[in-house]
Image 1 (tube, rainbow, N blue to C red):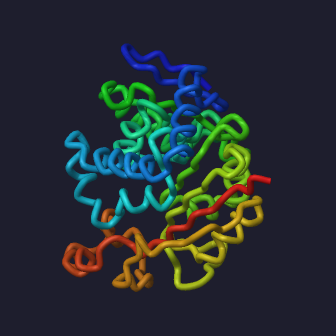
Image 2 (image 1 turned 90 degrees about the vertical axis):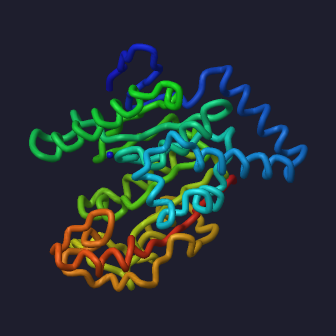
Amino acid sequence: MSHRLALTGLLLVAMPLAHAHDGHAHGQQHDHAAHAAQDPAAHAAHAAQALAAAVADSRRAPANVARDGWRHPQQTLEFFGVVPHHTVLEVTPGGGWYTEILAPLLAEHGQYIAAMVDPASLPEGRGREYQQRSLEGFKALVAGDAARFAKVKVNTFAPAAPVFAAPASVDVVLTFRNVHNWRSNGQEAGYFKGFFDALKPGGVLGVVEHRAKADVPADDKSGYVGVDQVVALATAAGFVLDASSEINANPADSKDHTDGVWMLPPGNRHPAADAAKYQAIGESDRMTLRFIKPAG
């Protein structure tokens, strides 16, 4: 959110700094990139079909599929330009909601990397224990279905000075609803610098985050963040804002909930008597931003 993990029948590597490909996989990626340049229309159609198939995969957890109407995975990943030959790094993937889509999509020609907090990098206490449970839970998810997740790599990092992957080795970095956590810990600048370092020139940083009405103070506990604040963080790290989208917007979200965004689904931290009210609102209003690491 470094150790080599030996899991029977499963290739799963966890280390602070990992190369995204072996030589064979790198060659596959290069071949697919060359074919894309030769026939971009056919490549785009194939990529869209592959993504649609990954989203429609019957092996996805029913509880995850039920959230598609709020998270719009196909439109979101298309907006971020994810295609099957990419190396994609997802930061702190939680329970693997996007892992179920991205890992199979990238399995044959690309690479999915999950970047997770190294519990050993944190002081003893609840924070370390939480990250240990998160890491173990994700490892269990991956180990439990080698058919889908055999190529998944797990890179662990220290939040105080995050290194997510080898320099300039990743095509796309994705983060979903995490920026507010980094801000609350005063670590947001380091994360964005780490993203910039990991991406290839011309690579994409895709950010989805709970959208505040305006800028919020550093000690804000609502879970929402201002769009300008996220753009400023990315720009300071060297990124250029390429585009924004309303794919994940929800105008029904008033953003003034007494206990923050977690009162909405799926957190549902509200009195039982208010269940219908919050179900009617749905999940939070979210910004969807695409940044580019300049090629020059």
